[in-house]
Structure formats: structure tokens, C-alpha cells
Length: 193
Image (cartoon, rainbow, N blue to C red):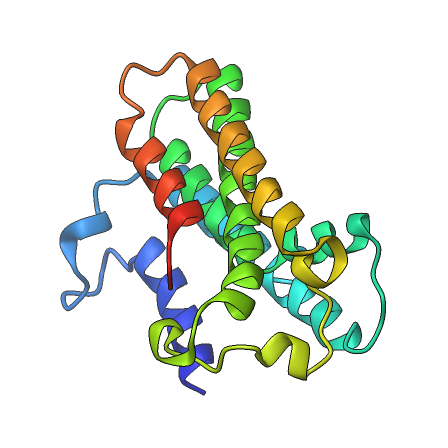
């Protein structure tokens, strides 16, 4: 119930009621068409083409051997879709050219997938206290992961490859200031929890 309420609240915050005196003034200056675009991006990332769809694949895949393409698609949809959407929502608030939009989407997609790959790695390399959740849970539940498919070393190499792809996408964007996004990408891949 809390998750359902928080998801609904996210949309309420993206499109505040201009006639509601109790609504925060934070989003009031955002044009309606931008609010609609933000809601569409979040809905897609949270729904069956995003997090919910990825979770459904994840639950249906317990005990099954997925190939790399299937595993990538599952991970891209899960948290990856939400991370990509958060980048794209930022882009939607500005005046992005088609080229910059494409570069930021490549960046968001790379860090979104990297987050899930690193999550798989941490499940076998970190302890429960550090993680804040039960370590080894994926293997115990016979869930398909990058570590179970590729092995630990190749999974770590893939995370680094995704970091390189994200940083290249930022470079290709031509945006003057990408330091914060580059730092975010590095933290996603180098995190310990």
C-alpha cells in the first residue's frame, strides 16, 4: 500500500493542482505540456514497459536459465528504466536538441543497466550488514543474474564497459557541464552498497 501511495504521489508532484491552495508552489511555473511529458516518462518507466514489466520477468525467471539478451532486457526494465527516466525527465525540463536527447538517453540507459549489474555483483561480494539486505539472496532464490551467467570477473568487466559507454555518451552530448552526471555514473558502478 505504501508503494502504491508513493507512486501516486510522484504523479501528483509532477502535475500539481493549480487551484489547490495547499499544493506546493514548486512546480507551478512548469508549463502543462512539460508536466504531461514528465508524467508520461515516469509512467512508462514504472509500468509494464519499465519497472513492473522487469519485475514480472524477474519473478517468472526464477530457476530458469536466461541468455544474456534476456537478462539484459530484464535488468534494463527494472530499476534501469527508472534511472533512465530520471535522466530523461531532467532533459525534458530544458531545451534539448535531438542529439543531446539521444546522448542523455544512452547515458541513462547505460547507468540504469550498470546499477543492476553492480547489484548482482554486490549480492555475491558484499556482506549483509554492508548491503543492508540479505547477501547471497539471488543465488539462494535461484534467480538469473549477471554473475551466474557471466561469472564475477566478466560481470565486473561489463559494469566497467557500461560506465565507459555512459561517459562517452556524456562526452558526445557536447554539453558544457557534465561533471555531476559523470560523477553519478562513477558512483553507480563503484558503489559498495
